[in-house]
Each structure stands twice: as C-alpha cells, then as structure tokens.
Length: 456
Image (cartoon, rainbow, N blue to C red; front, side, top):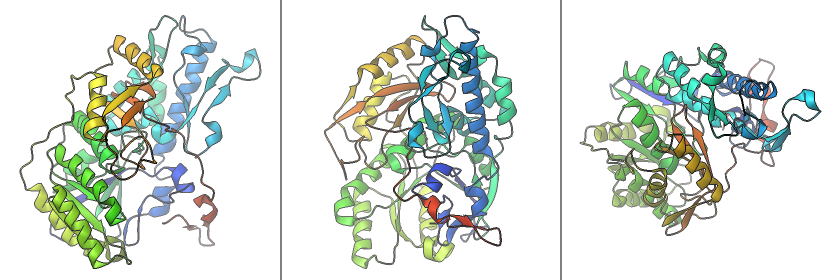
C-alpha cells in the first residue's frame, strides 16, 4: 500500500545508454525520489535494449544481403530504407557510406545510424499487446521499395522468425521498486522527441491488474510525450487516462505563458490537469505562489508543491492526493484530430492546436514521401512528430510560447509496424552527439564493484 492507503504502480521507460553517458546521466530519478537497483536499470538492465538493437541490426544485414543476392526482383541499394542503430551518442555515424571495399563487401550506398530508442522495433515493443502482436507488427515493417515502387516488408524477406528469436523475451515487463518499496514497472524506451516517448502498453495492463492507481510516463512535456500518448498509445491500447500530471517550468515570470500553454494542451484533450511544482531549496514563497497562480488561472485542476527529491514520499503526499481527487472528476476525452483525417489535416491540427503555429510547410521531399505512402494505403496512420524538446515549436531558439509561425515538415518516414507516420520537423537528429564534457568522464566502478558517478 502507498502512503494514502491505495495500491499504486509507477510505469517508466527504460533509460538509454546514449544520454546516460552523454549529457543527462542516469534515468532512475534523483534524491529520495528514485527507483532501484539503479546501476542495473541504467546500464544493462534485463537486456531489452540490447535485444532491440541486435534485432534491428540483424534486419539491416538481412536487407543488405537480400539486395546483394538479388533475392527480391528490382530491389536495389537505392530502395533500402532501413537504417542501422547504436546505443552510443556518436555524431560520426549520422551519415555513412556502407559497402566500401569492392564488389564482395555488400551494396555500396549512403546510409545512416539512429539511436536505439528511435528504432521502429523499440516503438513496436512499447505498443505490442503480446508475443503474437509483436510478431505481426514485426512482419509489417517496411524496409524499402523496389524500383517499381512496391514496398518490401519483413514478411516478404521471411525473417520475422529470426527477429523473434532475439525479441520474444522482451515482451515481459520488468518489475523493480521505489526507494520506499512501491512497485515500479520499467519497460521499453522510445525517445520522447524522436519517437512516441511512452512506456509499454503491456506494462500498463500488468499494473492495472494489481494497482488502484497507475502513473505511466509520457516523456517530454505535453507537446511531445502527452500528445503522442493520447494520439498513438491510448488509441492503440484502448486504455483511457483519468488525469494528467504536468511538472512545472523554471523562471516563473518569463516561463508563465509556456506553463499556461502546456496546461491548455492537456485541457484541450478533456482531462483534468494537476501541476506538480517541484520545490528547490532556492525557491522563494513568492515564486512558488506565482507558479500556482499561473497554473490555476490557465485552467489546472490543482497546482501543488512537491518536495519528493528531498523528502521522498512524504514530500509528495499532497500532490498524490490532488491526483487521486482529479481522477474522480468527470472527463470527456477529445483528440486534436479524427483518425480518418488526412496526414496534412493531422499535421495542421497538431501545429495549430499543440505547437501554436499558424500553418505547416511541407518540403518537396516530405510531400513526395506522403504521396507514395498514400499510394500504399498508409496515409491515414497517426502522425508521430519528431521535433526539438527545447521549444513548443520546431525551433529551439523560439522560447516560451511562440505563436503564428510556420511549422516545417522536412521529411516523412513510415513506421508501418508501429502504426504511425514519422514526421521530422526542423533540424532534428535521430542520433544525438556527445556534449563538450560527457557524463562518461564521471563514471567508474569502485573497489566494491559498485558503479559510481551515474546519478544526477
């Protein structure tokens, strides 16, 4: 039981090695608000991410081999659309030339690496309903197209069985605990800015079989994680949320409109919004009161100070009660777009209702891709927008609450197995690079065999 007498579970994404060794450090919380065992969760955990990476890169090798062996008529290097992945933030692999060395080294072509968290297989794992659904989704993955424009799938290659040998155990959610012994289910790890940013459907269903209240993560604020949670995860799972909790932002005076916008996004979906005001030692009572006033004026159901970092569960009881109260209110869920809308209509709805833009500009490349996807019958899939997390917009330099601008879509990819179209807005990298001082420089293993330097 939790402190308020309810059975609870917190469901989180699995941390990713790239950010852990790069700019962020560990992904298991901080202070007294953490899940354990931290070093295992952050580094190798149960091997799910490694299995996803192995399956993704095995498929890349099998695709290259099919082209090299002329196994599928008219499928040549120019038609390959499947990348490779790595779990390192390595900007040198963003664009590469593969097959260099002569005729015996495979098809010569320009290629790329993505971060494992951006793999379609990772998205599929997070959205699958079980082993059979995982297999079906894997079979639908589109890896390229023939010269005649016919899509090439995993099923056509006949390799779904091989991929399942690497993936069949990944569908089992991973149970760990908070510092106070409450259950935490950590499963799947799609990025929030370049994927759909949610922990798995299977984790939520498992938790709902036990808990009265399940807190499930949707990474990167309401313009990314929450929006994708609603349009992609909720619609695919059928599990409807009762309320949303929104962490507060820094710099009260300048950030007020930004906070108000995020509260408005949650409210536009018909859900009660509770704002968690994370308390820092340097915060003044006036600043905390200002945040509360901004949130409530914007339409939040409640805005509650939270000191979980310093006090653990004791510092979050008031927030927890506010969430319980919010879930008891009536909600009428609505969406920014109907499923039957066109891709252009969906993108425009997101741009105007979520990102504050006036219109959308499609590049020639994205427009041509969309026409092809529509010819293949994929035009009605939801949009998963890949954009910066540093702004509501596509541009990290547009701070606070930009409005009335043009939202650009530079490229469009199809994640048919996952069940969405993957749009890239502005300058967005699907493989991060390392900062000037990577967190890797702080990490080691001490004489007792303990990993040190991983926590924030």
